[in-house]
Image 1 (cartoon, rainbow, N blue to C red):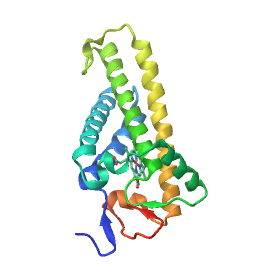
Image 2 (image 1 turned 30 degrees about the vertical axis):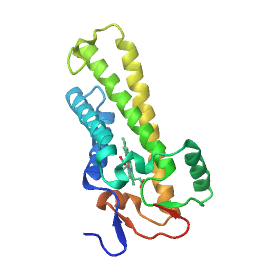
Image 3 (image 1 turned 180 degrees about the vertical axis):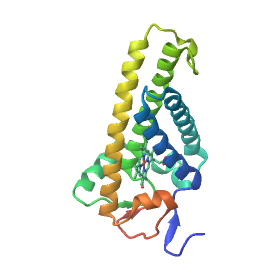
Length: 192
Ligand code: HEM
């Protein structure tokens, strides 16, 4: 049940998706080759989460749907500029800069997982790409590392973006991603 001045923005499946993704990414990143079984399992979890998110983008709650937050790139750039000058509008759902970040994060995570499965297939002859063969092993390995590190860079920018938006709009967005609730206050400078 929503409290009087709050609105349920992030549904439970989306919140579970987010925090399981955070845990799986951290585990995958720190285990690398050292704990291969755990590393590969974290990869399976991430692959499953990406598949879930793509489906949830069409059938999930209002603010989880791609139609609610995907927008023109020019709008994202304008939003980013305004953010730097502390002038950005408040969005109830994802803002236009966040929406681009989400798509980049999902894309990089997807490439990282697929190339990870390719390395696993080439080296261990196991996993969903077990039959891939040894031929391009080094290429898969190189790509896997590059995209894992690109994802990490995006995650850092993502966290900085969340902090900046929380500061600008005096709203704890991390708490919102835990409880699902945000302040239900619309004024002339706000967008739904
Ligand atoms: C402790 C670190 C993190 C914090 C505090 C955090 C916080 C948040 C918050 C507050 C949002 C909602 C943004 C909004 O209000 O529009 C969000 C969304 C998102 N975050 Fe994070 N995040 C963290 C780490 C990560 C990591 C490691 C990943 C990916 C590997 C990630 C991927 C995403 C994605 C994909 C969304 C979009 C949610 C959706 O699917 O609609 N986050 N995050």
